Each structure stands twice: as C-alpha cells, then as structure tokens.
Image (cartoon, rainbow, N blue to C red; front, side):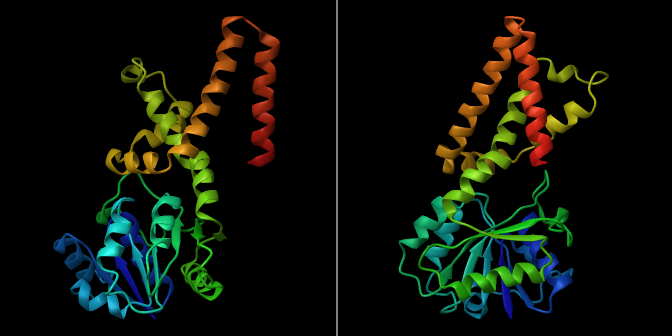
Length: 275
C-alpha cells in the first residue's frame, strides 16, 4: 500500500519512521521546505517524493500534518488530485472544526480525522523518532457518512504501526476529552510559570515544579490555533479549574482546615481510582 505523509515535522516524520520500522508499505513524503523532504529521502525515512500533482493520486492513505487552520485549506486546494476512494487523514489535536468543515465538501475520497496521541516539546524533523508512538493511543473521528470499512482500514494501519490502543469516537467527544487531558494542562502550566517568583525557582524547586511546569514549553503559534478552535470545551475546563482553585483559596483564607483536608482527600481518592 502507498502511504503519503504530507508535512515532515515531528509528527509527520515520526509517522513515516514508524511505518518504515513496523510495516512493509511504500512511504511517500512531501514537505513545504524542500530541504527537509530531501533529507527524509536521503535518510531513508521515505521511499519517494515528487510534486503534489504526481504523488497525491498514488496514495491509498494520506496523512496531512499541518497546523489546524491549514489542514482543510490544503485538502480543499488539492481535492482534485487525491486518489478516488482513498483515505485522507490528519494528525491534528482538534477534530470538530476540521471534520465538520470537510464534511460539507463534495469529495470523492474519505476524510477521517485522526490524532496520534504523542508529542515532544519540539516539533521539527530532527526530533522525529520511530518509537514516538510506543504506548500511545491513535484516535479516529469518522463522521456519519464514512463507510465502516474505511475506518477499519485506518485503525488497521495504526495497529500495524504498533500503537498501544486505538479509539474511534466522534469529533465532538474527542475535543471535549482533549480539552481535559491535554489543553487545560498547557493552560495551567503557562499560567503557573507566569508567577513573578518563577525566575527564582532554582535551588527551591524539585519534582512538583518540574511536573507542573513541563508543558509550558509550548509552540505558541500552533497552540493558539488549537485553543481557539476548541474554544467551548476548553473554556468549560478553565471554568471548572478556576472554580476548584477558588474553593482552595476560600479554605486557606478562612483557615477552614476541615474543608481543606476534605478537598485534598477527595482529589487523592479520585486520582487513586482513575490513575
């Protein structure tokens, strides 16, 4: 099978490396910066490249790895080149806006949103790994008009790539869960290190500081789009977080040790139960 990777940054190149490591599929690659494409070809990360008008019609499955706003634009712009009845997917961290936008288009291929749940603090070709997705989940978000066989084919490819778990859900449920499991953590981390005391942490900080602040290392351009494109679920999570923080503040200000103890016991119990 021909698998095309469009966009050879961290995720795209890691997908290509993982496919090369775990499957026998023919890997085609393309990147806007030609020097990156050439490196991927020279490194053996991809088997073939070429002009979009030449390689898009060859691909049985295509992954488009761009920032959120650029994905629908790229697919619409090149929709006449994609192989008929092929699968076109992506790797973006939000799904509803992209999937519902492309659902309105008259396409002769099948767009199925996807989200390989892994990443690093840097997002360039040089940091790509062939084991980035070990122990990771691969989430598919087909819309109602997608044949089950096409979703099964994409899930099957993820299983060939050795993803630890595959999940099929709606774009909307994906986005509300990602608001909780990922986006709110980045909001919290960035808010945390905005403290005026943050520059003086050396000598005082240990594991708690590292754990909470780690994901403040953020690609601001990409995450700005992700946050705004997932506005409603993320704002709900921010509201819940602020509400819980205010409960802690109230207990501390009023020296309500019993209620403060209960809040922490409740948090501890929930964490023990859910992992």
